[in-house]
Image (cartoon, rainbow, N blue to C red; front, side, top):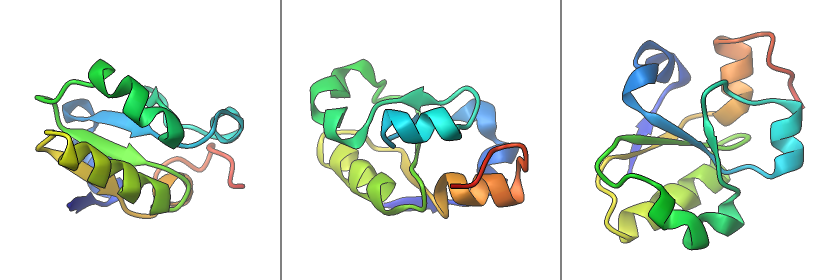
Length: 102
């Protein structure tokens, strides 16, 4: 599985589908504008809604759930999948300080 820093993701933002796998209550607190929300538990049911031919950067709070989601996508035919190092927490600290920490 590939990983990507929040800095690199920010620099190349338009080249990725940013997939947020956190729960709705977490996304209500903080999110990356323009990301797609599919909670981790819903990935199997909604996998067909994701484009296998597009680069996907998976994000969660710190990187654990996004790593599991990225592995699942890779096992199901996706080929360009990145785990966002540090998750939304790193995004808030390093890219966009207006995003609340929690």
